Length: 81
Image 1 (cartoon, helix red, strand yellow):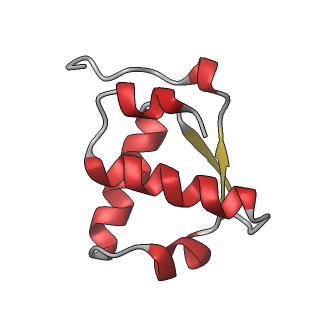
Image 2: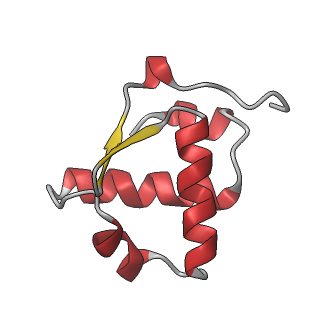
């Protein structure tokens, strides 16, 4: 896990989602929404917002229905961080 995730100025939800994605990836489970939802403890609309936030900061990309975690060097900090 990249500790830089805590320094990007992201919302709690976005950081939580990254941790879920990290765990799924470590467990070799596809990074698909259907695999994220059972681990997500907030309304699904918050999941969608967190996904968009991670995309905006280039932490993840989406290819079809699967998410890809980008290398740390591609991540973009929040302007407020």
